Image (cartoon, rainbow, N blue to C red):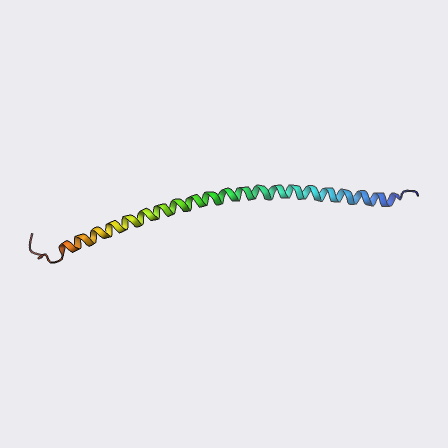
Length: 86
């Protein structure tokens, strides 16, 4: 049975298109993978910044609590004292 040149031409064209699409998919996958890696690094960096901020806020809360306790203590000492007594 003789081979059909038209069928061979169509098969070759389909093969080329398939290979081109496959190459494009590989390139796009590489780009997506690279962007995902960049995003993971940014999220990790953001997570560290949030941890640092939480630590700072915790330190500020403790300082505020100490200052409030000192204010309460000083006000308690002032209660009952005469304003003109020195």
